[in-house]
Image (spheres, rainbow, N blue to C red):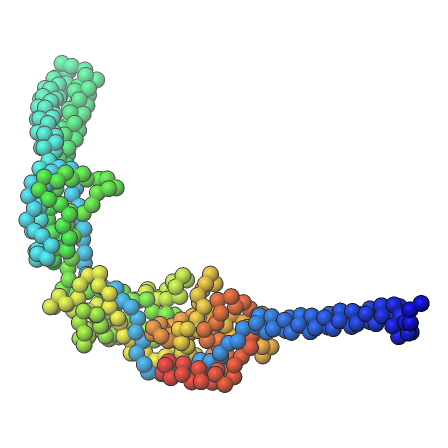
Length: 392
């Protein structure tokens, strides 16, 4: 019989082993629970974006308002052919000066020429018939005065004269029409100016009166230029006829041109929130060209509550231009703004924000209204100061 003590009994050993196993399992569960709790906290922290806020800076009063402008000739006329034919000769090319009434090109229109010959023959026939009807009516009226013929027959002869006269007039009108049409084979300048386009050559077929017709020439009067600018609504009250505006063109560095505001549409375009105005500028040396781009500088004060923001704070999407504000609840709120002036790295905002708002700089693309955000206070002040410096 073996000598096994109570401490080494199989039951005791099994109990101890079970207790150890339970302790190990409990420790593992506790460790996993703590890990999952830490992971959940880290995930929640990652879901809250860290943002930098800036305060808009009030716009500087008295600075010039600079807006893009489009230049057009005082008068510009595309020259179309009024009759179909072939180009026999053209006399001017792009850049040539022309005077009012000068011939630009001549067309050959053989069909019109033949139609005119036929119309003149029809006119001769109609005139001959008219003369015969006139003689007949005159004789019958003389015979009626002697009661040699009936009044009914005389009226018929007089009526035939009236009909033949009408036919003669119609034939004459047709001849005049074709003569005018034949005259359209000479294309002339409607006013003095410069040829800015030519799209024809000798022998080219010209078809008149179709939607596919293209102008053979374009003549523009460039002695004065029209300048069209769209002014934001917030500045429209300061715009008035007679105001002098400075124009700058990229091809003339350091040179400016004086323009005078001549008229305004006096209506706000609901799509852009701007008012269309027209300026005019003298162009004696032809430095200004039709279709050119320019910058128009208006001597205006800043809009009433305008503020300046860096362009990096803007959000552009289906709701227009917006910025993200941080509310007192620590959540983001997207707000639509109106840009009064775009200066490239900064923009002047007319409505939507004030200098007291906290605006998120470089907002995340996924940021939505109601999202919680974590504001970095120290870096925020530095960024705001730098942004304001850039805006100024």
